[in-house]
Amino acid sequence: MRGTLGRGQAPGASAPVGISGVQKLPLRLPTIWAVPGDGPARAIAYGVEGSAPAVELIEIDGGRVVWRDSKNCAGPVVGVTATTIVCADAKGTRGIDVADGSAKWETSEPFLAMDGDRITIAGVGTATIRGANEGGELGYVKLPAGVLGTSIVASCGAAGRELFAIGQDGKLQRIVDVGAVVKLAWATPIGPLGKLEACDGASI
Image 1 (cartoon, rainbow, N blue to C red):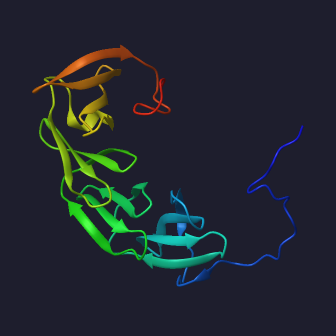
Image 2: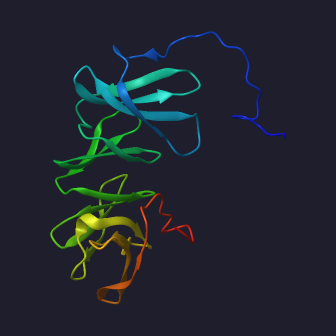
Image 3: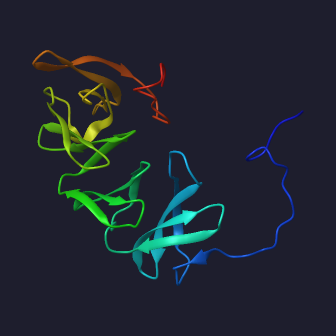
């Protein structure tokens, strides 16, 4: 069997060294997100510093923490774009800058789903689609009767107005925008949802 590992280079011996940078303590219980896009390999880590949640940017090749912040991203990281980290908790949804961890935008509405550079947040009987990078509103959907905002798992289409949700009966639902009317296109029974490629994929 033949293959490649990593960037096409055979692994070599390396000295055991730590990650350098601004951190005082290593993050506990870290969750790692790759930063997409061209350029140097980077990762976002969300975890606990002491007793407070914190997020940091790591340069992979240099083994260096570029910055760490414990104020602007109090909730867990739910998605990362090339320029923005999206965090969400019971107080709402917010975006912080990948470059330096500074706050970019925030809303008190709860996070539902993220697909690419778009996020979906919940209202009462509604779902609002926002751009993940700047937080601006891209679309607004009044949900059909019987569809809960908190059940949305994906948002697709040019304005994000094609939605997928998990109904109270466990069925996967597809909600579509037909002119001025948003309606339930279909619902089908499924097992536990492992991965949903609703927008780019042809299968679940």
